[in-house]
Length: 155
Image (cartoon, rainbow, N blue to C red; front, top):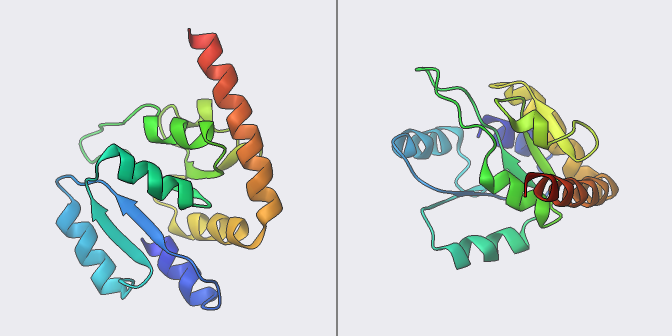
């Protein structure tokens, strides 16, 4: 959320929203952080949604932002299915160098990766994607290719 707030303050002229989908044990903390940052007009908290509604929101999106981090107990998520689906749909992705994500997202080719918990790095890369539609298209194209070759080599 901090990265979205940073981009909004650096470039208030850019019209964008962050559609946050899902829930979990940290949901109330996330909602509070959105309030503290004053980002209620930029960050829409959807909670858990049915698959068709998630697909509709993804179809309307220009960038898929998924900053994964290692939990305080050391838990990691591997390669997020949502990230694979976004790439397969041709969406440019921005994520973190976390667990197996760098095996899927090639930095600067099919998306951007930043270190975990690097909100300044996320903000810089998000701003770059927001300002450069040609990069978004190239990442989307490469991500789709990567997801197709990954799924064929796995089967």
